[in-house]
Image: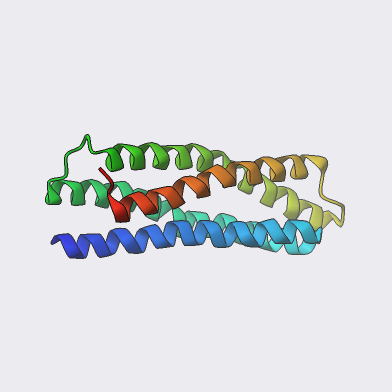
Length: 154
């Protein structure tokens, strides 16, 4: 595969990964503030599906396509922007894995509360606060990775 085709795949997968993550976080963040158990049940299930269908494949494509492009372009592996990007990507991943775990559990709790016509349990809100707290460093890290990918500072 040529470099430009690979670069297009890399860019599209990064947009899909960060865009889906940001979009689903936006909806879950605001639906939580509505306190509508029915709406939260619907949105939280869709957030989990979006993560599995879109974010997870993109998370896999990113390092594979990035490593391939680094190889094709002949960039030194000890370049600042490569090391910094990998560290920030790892930070985002360390935040993202528990976020997925929280989302799955929050979705189950919301569906159960909706079916039983009860309020969301306190544990849901505890998880929601942790989910939100992990989202800020993950998203910030990815914004810096975008900058590093484009600028490639030395």
